Length: 215
Image (cartoon, rainbow, N blue to C red; front, side, top):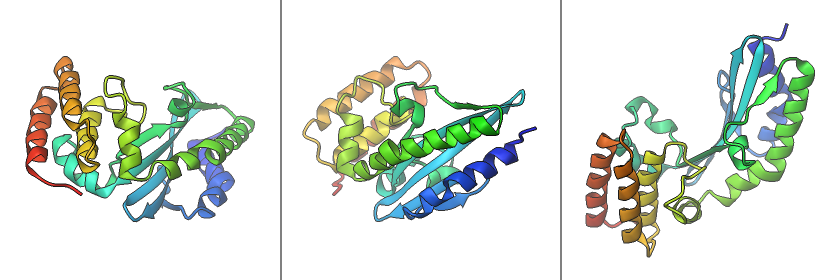
């Protein structure tokens, strides 16, 4: 019978070379997390594996962290300090990039697992790694998350966090629509009945951003 350790070991065996040849290192074997540091922060790929009634579900996620954005954002996003060094500026998944937000690979046996590894390898070659390369600067991320503020972003899971990180990125890029974005994200947070504390933090952040120069 397939076990979760079998799933992890097979993914490591099948896909380790793919990451090594691009400079990624395994930073957490338990969570199958691969990280590539670069000048502004790091890029990462990781495999979330859950088990339910002998069926395994695999979610492949990709993220980019820009340190200066996260250092400013974390105190306002209510993120626990223990996780400050691991937060991502953008984070998405195979499913989101392929147009199916909740997609996970379903694995019941070794054949299924082999097929999943082949599909994930193909995806990383053709879409995943190019995405990480194309969106590793503050200006590219500004376009990615601030172009359509009225729409939920598939590149930040928590939309309250998107408002906070989006406005920081806009300030850093001197986005000419900064004031419009301030109002747009404030409107989004005002519609969220669960975001009382986040709304207050957002307005404190905005006042802070108006008073400082970021470049």
